[in-house]
Each structure stands twice: as structure tokens, then as C-alpha cells.
Length: 129
Image (cartoon, rainbow, N blue to C red):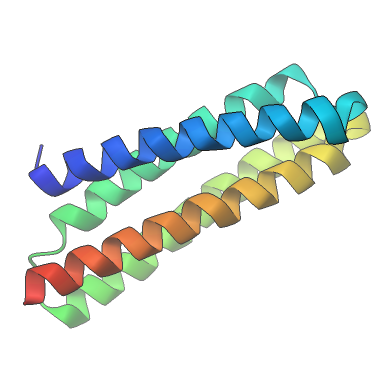
């Protein structure tokens, strides 16, 4: 495992802990009736997905910029498709919980994807210097 990936995973743990803390506060005080036990697993799912796909991007960082860009777009395309299948499956089997799930999922997706993009861009900039 590369040093960059270890650093990313440690920072991802911190992000996940922050997400859990904020999620606890939001569901405890703002929306106490909208919490479902499965929501507690969403940050772990995002942690796993981002760890795997970020590892792929770090391993592809040695490629020239054109090939790296293709790999980057492929990784994000596959990630989006897998998460879309996950969303549809959950919403199909739990229609009464679908709206709070989709809102929570979307917020987490934005947080984790923003974090991953910023991390890979910083890594690429640092590596190119």
C-alpha cells in the first residue's frame, strides 16, 4: 500500500467520524423520527467504496495525464453505476423509507465525492511538482 493511499485512508476515517458526529446531531435534534438503523451503515459503505476506487486512482497516477483522465472518468462512472444500483435496490425494497434514504445518501455522496476529488487533485498536483 502506497503512502498516499494510507494518508488518504486515515483522512477518510476522520471524515467518517465527523460524518457520524454530525449525523448523530442532525438525527437526534432536527429529524428524530426520520432515523433508520440502516443509515448508520451508509458512511461505512461510502468509506469502503471510496477506499477501493481511490486506491485505483492512486495506482493509475503514474500514467500520463490523458490515460489518467480516462481512468479517472471510468472509475467515477463505475462508482456512480454501482451506487445507483444500490439506491434503486434499497428504494425498491423499502419504499416507505426511500425519501429520507435518498436525501441522506445524496448528502453523503456529495461529501465523500468532494473529499475524494480534492484529495486526488492535490495528490496529482503534488506529484507533478
